[in-house]
Length: 140
Image 1: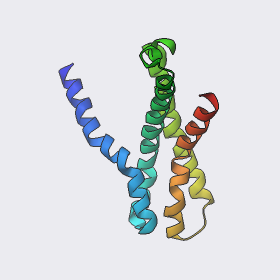
Image 2: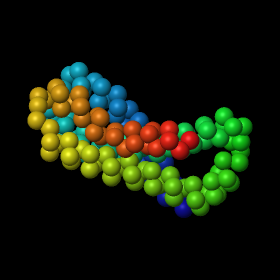
Image 3: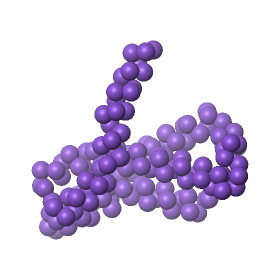
């Protein structure tokens, strides 16, 4: 058990910072495109999009309950841990798969300069986050 915990901690130390800061890298690449960065961006951006979609889906839901003054009952009122954790994993999977599919469509349809590619790519990559935001606005 301790070995698994150490491995998970190491994995989180290695993956969470790049996933969290990839949107800033996208902004930098929009101003200064580097063609060699396109392939790693295409493969790593879905993980970042899934991370941000998961984070936003959970924090925005808890924030609504906090405004209502019922934050401590949030998990219980949402069906307990066996309901909220799979739901969060669903948002994560939606973020990863949705981002990858949007990227495939973007790369297949885009015809333009590298600067425009790097400027518009984050819109496709983070489209599941935008979809989560729209869903929360409608259901909050």
